[in-house]
Length: 309
Length: 268
Ligand SMILES: Nc1ncnc2c1ncn2[C@@H]1O[C@H](COP(=O)(O)OP(=O)(O)O)[C@@H](O)[C@H]1O
Ligand SMILES: [Mg+2]
Image 1 (cartoon, helix red, strand yellow):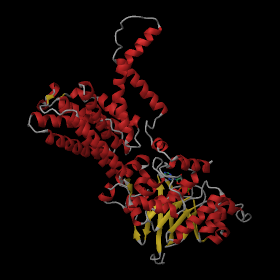
Image 2 (tube, chains in turn brown, green):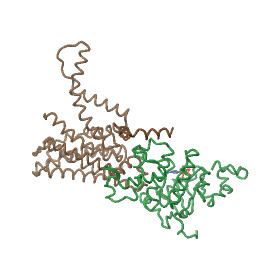
Image 3 (cartoon, chains in turn cyan, purple):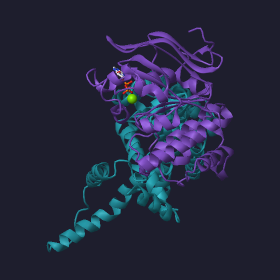
């Protein structure tokens, strides 16, 4: 496989894991805009253990997950007291605190970053992404997953039905933190270098967008969201020059053209995001869509609709 | 109250609830005998839903005691009360809109499935779990199909009303609180619901029902407690509730109270 494609598969795998890291709290009704902070925790844990302590990836990856999980569980208790936009701001602020702390810690390379000696090739993140996807599908099929989705729909009634809302939300937040730590460790070992600028606010925003646009009602949503938004810029990269060529042809312009500016890809991405929010605010993949696509479901739902009419 | 509480599944003792300066429930006491089908009625705003919210622990009383099988429960968190045997439905349907019918019913089983192992075992991954089959069986017992996979938001109102009752039953409660179960149903659906509630009662579940449809109340409930402006004004057989001057006054106003006895049946 060419370096271009292995690079894309690596990024795609890391993005899928990150999308699930954010999906778990979002599925319980808690928006998390601190993804980059949790990923940075994992990336720097792995980088530090690999570069300074000389540990192998077998140790650095679990350690990164543990740090991500424990830190997010610790902050979940105060953090989940806040709601709605305040929680979004609090998670965002947490990521800024992590970035600031790393920037000011010379042992972690400060603004210079850290080189990571042990290199892991693309099969590792791919396998990790597949395992994480299976794990989240499993989790959503358990009673724990059911109570997660119930907290999202109506936390008052879920409490009256005997569910510990706080327990479910803290657990989902902490498992998400561990997954973000895993994504960070994989980033460190596949890119061989970590610098805090890579874990910026736009990473947090993008990951949350993968989840919200992919859909939060099923574990398929983040998979589609991450795949769509990771691959779309690459598709546009290939397609845009041809579009420009065709347009130029329409207007009778001949000869060699400069390739279109990179930033157009992000303009198109932004427009698509706005359109999705307007026309499919529950995300691309919804429960209803999944049911509609299953064969043999239609007759039953048709009778129900007739009965109600 | 000299009566022993042993035969009563639920007793309210001098319960008061204020919101700010507003007294919503004032010194209300009544008993619900085990196995009874009791109505809690009164005009809009009388405080019926508030009584349910006090029993289920959504609100704390300012004064008084709530006894479940002779045990004071007002200090017990709302989340733990369903495990003690009190389940409820809501005046406005509060099913989880993005969950399927069976998933909503499985959520109702939660009070019986608190352990970590129960939480981490799949409900339906490769085939149906025991919990899943039980939920389907309960729906079938109540003559409801499972509407496979359909999320409840898309189902008709009358069906969702019944599913909410089934979700409460999934906890295997001793006492079921139903807040206006027939509101919004047509005559046929109401008959169907009445039969459905009778069947639930025959399994030994005590019913406390808030309902405006006096036809349903008379067919289903032997006894009634009537509230007006947060005070109890009647506590006795359903058969004679319309002869009570205080009740007539509450529903019709003081001037009509003596004349229009028949009217109470329609407005109540
Ligand atoms: N949380 C609350 N805050 C303030 N007032 C409330 C609250 N809940 C109920 N009330 C008031 O209590 C009164 C009784 O309400 P409710 O119990 O819903 O009546 P009912 O169910 O009998 O129609 C109403 O006047 C209502 O406005
Ligand atoms: Mg009410």
